[in-house]
Length: 304
Image (cartoon, rainbow, N blue to C red):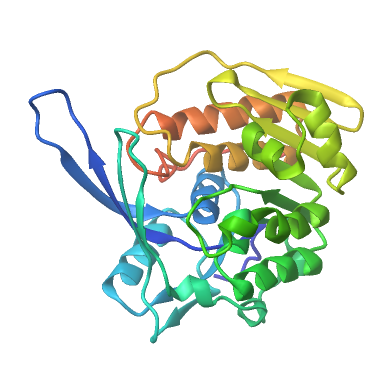
């Protein structure tokens, strides 16, 4: 593989065990797969026809082997994933019933990420880079690596705060994540998460407050309430057709990929919101974090 990736993402991916809760009286089933905010977006970007590279560390264990095998099968560029012989790959256990997930990620390989993990990665040549607040909350090293990724980037810098409880830095989320927000060009986040981060209730006022921190474009994800975006002085809201959610975990990551893919293709904010909603709905309608994005489809890129 010699082509440079369109998008480079940095973050942790875990081996994921999803317990699928069936109808009353039916026994549950288990799906063993992978899950990680940034790699989920890479899978969706690859499925939409973009070169997407995921940068991280995995243990030299079976779990790490399976994560690499599955992401490679989805078309994700893995040239800059390092294997750590001293630390394990993290695990996530969750149910489709909506019960809080259980993590076994303390001391994981990805928690030892450092800026040096970006050595040799062509960050400056990527059309976009992507990182979430999860990476910043994994540890001091991952947070520095996330800042380094954004500082080195010359393309579009995309940040999703993606607040998660129970991580090393979750009690200092604002302190750790705001440096990423301040470096972002495109900020995409759950409306409630962004409100918690910047102290503004919601809606356009929230997006404008986020813009004051540095991003020139802000997207609010509202779950069943759709999404909205503020770009320049244009405020756009999109309410998609309701669809049933079988397993919504990962839908926000797919939304990020769909929105970014359209913006990189020269599409309008309105078109990007529509594609983001379609991508998110695809993942929410299936079990697992990546939906059907292992089956390639394409977004037509427009001439500048």
